[in-house]
Image 1 (cartoon, rainbow, N blue to C red):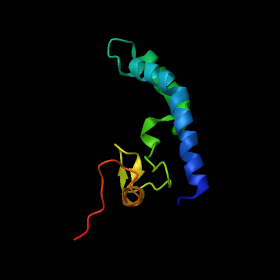
Image 2: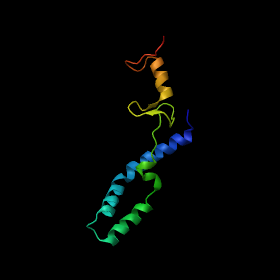
Image 3: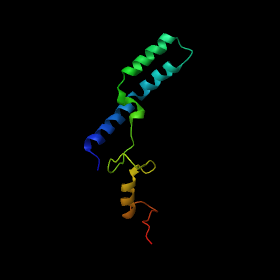
Image 4: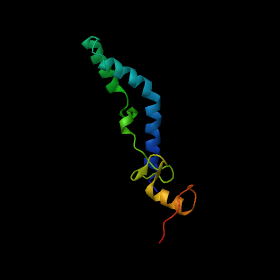
Length: 101
């Protein structure tokens, strides 16, 4: 189980990303538009830099929904390999059986 503080920090980042997504997209569009004047593009970059760092989508990290583990994460199932093995062993994932020979 991951630390509660790390799980909560990741949730806070997700909220910030959702809150500032449209504003960041608009500023990036202005800053990357070659047809606009250089001063306007530069001001857009400055405004983008003043937004919270954690509002950037690249700072998000996938975590297991059950344990909060950040490594060995299966995107399709949103769980880590350890949680997947436990769920499979308990028969809670349809079509998945524990191999034995």
